[in-house]
Structures are given as structure tokens and as C-alpha cells.
Image (cartoon, rainbow, N blue to C red; front, side, top):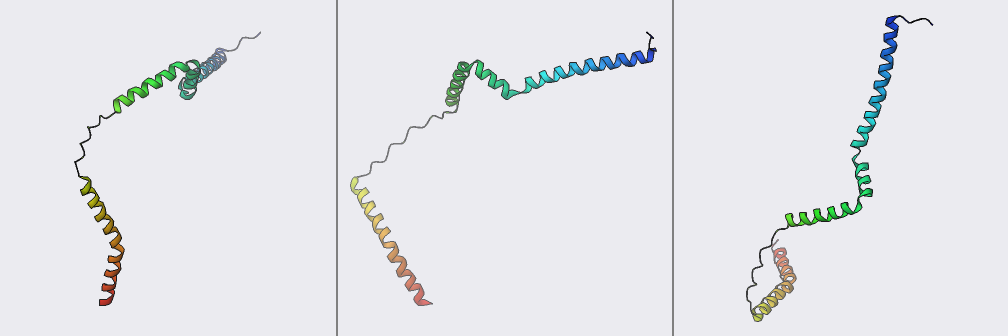
Length: 115
């Protein structure tokens, strides 16, 4: 068998090394894609450890509710108003509500009579 010249042998060696580098790079890219596929990784983790995720979410929700819970000021006591005063205010409010249409109609007649 004839031996290839040195330059052709180097070219073949470089081609072989290039093929090996491409194969290695393909493996590394596939591994990187798996590492960066967050939804698939979370889904796999949920399937492997469902109890841990459940109790972790409960703990997180409880901590968030504690952190975001604003303490309410105690309500100011309602002013002491007599029932009679409340009844009078309700009667006056009812009278005004009933009188509004009548007053509006009277006012429009007065305005229309001037023009």
C-alpha cells in the first residue's frame, strides 16, 4: 500500500479531528439544552417529589401571607346617636328624595316662562 504524502495525511488527520470535535460539541449542546429546558426539569421534579413541592408551596404561601399581611387598626367606636335622631334624618332624606322631581318640574316651568 502506498503511503500518502505528509500534507494529505495532515488534511485527513484534521478532518478526523474536526469530526470528533463536532461529535463532542453535539453532545455538549444536547446536554446544555437539557439543562436549560426549565419547564421539563420542573415537570420531572414535580413527578419525582410531589410531596416536597406541595408542602413547599404551602410554606411559601403561608410565609407570603405573613409578610404581606397588614395589621388593621382597631375600628373606631361608632358615635352614639339616638334612635330618634336617626329616624328624623331618615324622614328628612325621604322627604327630600320625594320632593326633588316636584321641585325640578316647578323650576323648569319658571325658567321656561321667562324665555
